[in-house]
Image 1 (tube, helix red, strand yellow):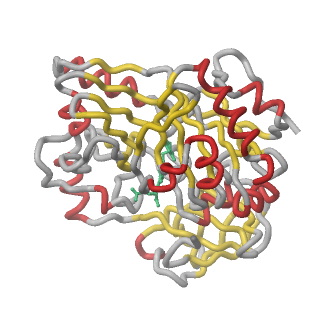
Image 2 (cartoon, rainbow, N blue to C red):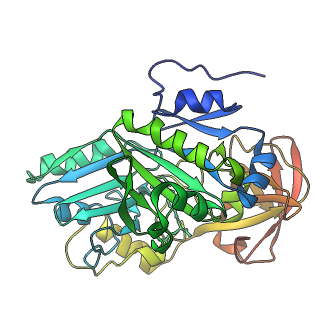
Length: 366
Ligand code: THG
């Protein structure tokens, strides 16, 4: 068993001391920052997440703030998604592509106003791309990473816990909407969102020093709800088909290959980077696409892509795989080639530990 080291360049979060004290057993690194991946193990954490409520230190979902008269134009420039109808306090899932139509990140964008947005990043250095575009186009906008650390409340008891700490009005917050709620004399920004299908919120904690008071209040208020520290859970997010940038897709993939067609509007008002490449990609149609695959038996952690074959021919690659206690199989995410992506296709998978039988599905589990 080897371990990753924790030098200073892997950034701590406002909650790292509390996460360590809560007994984190596996950390991941995301945007050069610590991300708790497991406490009592993937399976035990999974059952708890689906039954109770957890606090997730997702500070590593770093924000890019864009502020100034050209903020809306800059946001529009980096994505094929039509942002023209977004209102203040709305969140949107955002494919960001380069000039070849390749995915650079799949963040959530939060609109604060026509001249101010946050881009809540997945794991890639998008700040450099956005700063570069703003600089090259001489835009009247400031682009930086503010001291903002998302703290997620996830699980079926999320509303009950949040209502105790932030007031009953939070129950009326709609999915992918953000609003301010009172906490100890401050107004904190909270969205109904998160990287699970169990329901919940994300608190955008502004100022490192404001993190632990919120953590402690939620832990104290939720003792009888069995609140625990947690983190994005591998098997749960795989069942839900929530993609992980850098694993399930990279800059080699278009949004169409990633199944994100509904977030692309190529004839939206305003130009955007990658438009001509995506027009061609849409005309040609994707040659491979994200699929759910059920694999027989309990498979190892997927630390490199596993080839999927049909009759000895390359049919695709598995990029995420976790044992699912509820579905009694290894649930997986794959990029499948067009000839083999139909639901019901049987594939042979070269896992790290040997061959296994898999079945391509028409949809994810949850
Ligand atoms: N929340 C916030 N920032 C994030 C994530 C998050 N940054 C990193 C990462 N997660 C970005 N990736 C995703 C992937 C999926 C979703 C959100 C962020 C997601 N998808 C829903 C779904 O697929 O059902 C809803 C999408 C929609 O309909 O708009 O929530 O989790 N702040």
